[in-house]
Image (cartoon, rainbow, N blue to C red):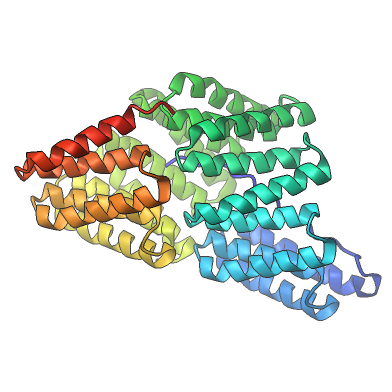
Length: 440
């Protein structure tokens, strides 16, 4: 699992907007800053408590429709989103947006930021059709208010590109990523950390398409910029190391990947502490490498530690916990330890269905994993409806021509062939082949 740096603009806290309330505003700002600091350290529960107090202070001192209240609402929503508590985040984002529109007008840059954040919430839940118009409106506001070549416009282009990339719409994503990169290079210079982020995101696009030769120099340039600008021990350097390592892993260059994963993990542990969620991601990445190599004994304790960190940081029902459960389940399945794998896969499915609803892309992945387990056990009758449901979700959320649809079609075809149902397998195989032949 690669760590992708997302650019999310934070709404700025302003002290002294109403002079009579400056003392209260100073208290609000201090609370807000403390909450954001706690969030940065992965202490989400504590951050939520402090941000709720900040919100209460703002509402009491400047009224319920003040921009300071909108800022606190946004920040509180961000914390809920990070914990996977999407139902709690949405009304806060919407109220924040409403305040900004009323206070500043519908075309203000802060409205654009609020739209972006609400879009990100929908994007995270796989609600792409709801996210896209918000991202586009945010981009339009920024272009009109700030000009076509402002860094904030680049950030919006990047976010819209990520939406298309996730859906496999690579041809729509690429020009947006490239335009964002051009803007950042022109506005900030070729060696700015934001340029590194843009290079990383364009590399991810090529990586997702298996265009490794195009991705590698972009990843490496991103890494070099971050090392120079931020120092060799910055968490953003760890992000770049993880991505370069992932590129090597995907190509089977395991000896080149391992030291990069290890260096990234050391950086995050030193910079963020041993129980930070980013450390859990680093542990997961290294474990994935070991699992791919069949080094199961080395992978298992890393997966387990990653899972424990996430459960502590986010609670037992967070989507990130489901990811770890799936990965640990996959490790047991690879060793034929099916009895250990099944409850992990089932718990992951339960978490994702509860968090996202029954038709999310992560639910489709969970269903596919569980189906593959039953297939391995020869329980074809139990596997088939899971494959079919997974296929239906992918077709609905990503479209009938997405590469992941081809994967499920191939899995189902394998099931039919194993069951002696060759005539049912053939059209699925042909359709999968036609999807894979599409030039993206």
